[in-house]
Image (cartoon, rainbow, N blue to C red; front, side, top):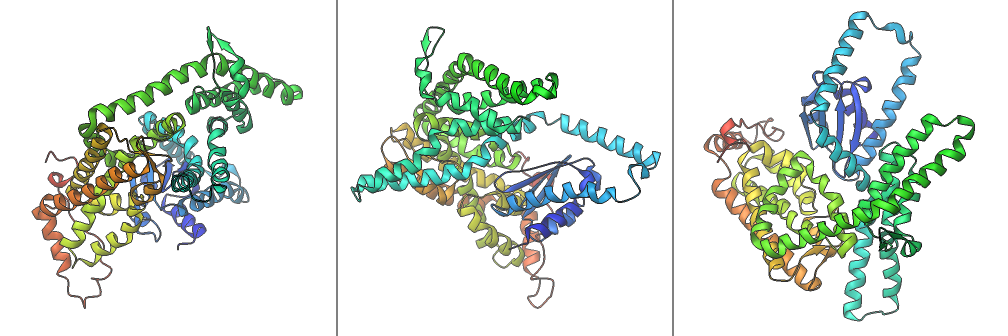
Length: 505
């Protein structure tokens, strides 16, 4: 396992040092680094770094795939290295060591970076919202697994004294989910987390049942995570405004009081009602879509998920999944979308079988497949299917057919849902539930997985590799086994524009 601190230092050097880093964020598998000068990034060195599964540059944004667990440690160490850099530089000759030419160049670089970042406002907004929910995923998985185990024990009638115990363990976090969302929302938007939590706590307070707004009596939990999200963001803006206008001598008393009073009142009087309507609409729309669109809706959703993962836009679905779980107990969208990863597994196994004599390709697939089966698809996307072009498309086809099968079960009245997010493929199996119970959900999800695997495999085997790419892969395979280049040869395939993902084939 790579050393996180050493890997962070290598990444820092490859991206041009701490002065070139504008922002660092991470999700469950990827490190996202916003750089001031893309020209200063040594992308080949970054891609060759041990521990980096893949590195992709999109303008000033770098997406570095490290895998779950490691990405959190590297992100922390990278931030620590960035924080230490200014103090180290302070021991030098001072801030005036830059020449006018260097300052002018730095200003031009910052201006170009700002212009580049302004073109991605939607993506930055998605990343900001997803950053509120991503820290909650481990607890959602844990509580979901405990709830799944408890449900199985309850259905089997085993150890009846244990099931209430497990029920409390699984439901405690979910009952206070609005508090945690409010805290993270306030933190992400520059406020104090505990004040955001105080506003989010209003939504789940029992006393809400005694409040009437616009002739409607509110209910505890109304508006759910969307209401808490809006309330936490509002609290951050109110707090930031109050800190600017409040004298320091009374800020400790005035700022938090006014923040909770103003943001809490708006949350109670407006946001809970509005968010409640939106939450119900999301639940109704998702249920209607799969209940009526069935196989067709599942086909479209399953086929589109890999491109969403590739661009990072799948993170924008996290609030929707969380809202559905909070409202109905499970999300019907996640099992359908998970079929995209299953189609990719089938595609990669087909490539392994077809080009098993290509040591580099087989080594890459063999290393990434275990993570793929556990629901982490980025290594396979960036390491195998996307560089080869067509296999990415045939993987999407496999995901589309798998999603169609899951959608068909929903249309037949046996909805397939997931009681937690953050898991996919085989790791999602313990988290299944639905309108007809775990058995039907497992049957629907398992059937979709098998179809996605098979279709992704067959489509890739038959149509997934063009003649030119096949010639390149077979040429690499023909390197004599005694040649010292063969075992370590990288995946070096020339993909023409007609073979790329954007090609109309």
